[in-house]
Length: 206
Length: 127
Image (cartoon, rainbow over all chains, first blue to last red; front, side):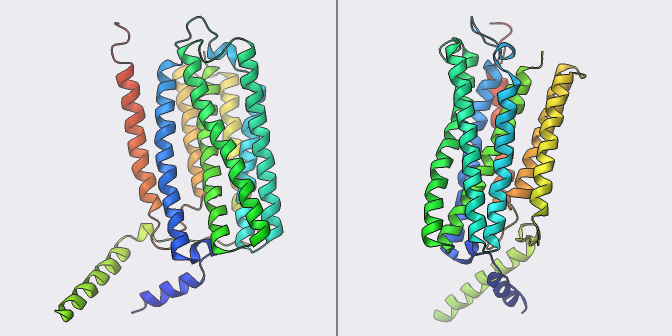
């Protein structure tokens, strides 16, 4: 039969992160993790959807949000999603320097995103819009804060991957780790697009 | 006894083979290119979708409910673009089972989000 031969041939052409059976199953496992994370963000989005008009004595979404920093954060995160894509592309072509360089660019863009978001939050709190103020603000800070915490964790994770890549080079383990990190990073980008649309843009629709 | 066991394992193997052949939509596919055109187009596409939503909200030509539906549709398109272009969703060692997980979670998340919003707003106009 021709099927086993074709399979063997396919395995020889597999990228390094899929080459080892035990490492490649962890990529499938990581997809399962992302699927559960969708449920976490889904529940936070539904509570925000319910409470977004419950502003009590505090500011409304329309009064609180401004487009400038949010557009900056969106462009930073979209660009970092592109650069980690280029890092994986370079990894597939066995170009270690380009992989590391694009990973560093991704890290810096992610750090810029977190700094801008923290700056926003500090500004809101200074204006008296803390999460004690209203159900809207509680739901807002928990939803956007959970995403920000994910990005912060991603930066720490990618820093360890950077050290491993520099010290060990491309192995089935390091390539698998970088590939799962790229999945995580693109996933956070998708979540941010929904936050941008449903929280910030929707807040400006009267 | 041993023969029977061997026969059984052969049958299982054949069944698995048949299963693989019966699921052509889950067979893995890998992309190879000389220049990352797909990534570049994905990036441009994501920027276009984002700024289209932004301009629609700033210009505010549509009524609120229609506007929200349009920008949410743009966001779903953006998510599909990220999954298809950047997340290599069709790549796997064996069958690409993650596509099944993704389909299932779309169903579950849609149910959970929709039902939660419905039940939490239930009769909220009355009480």
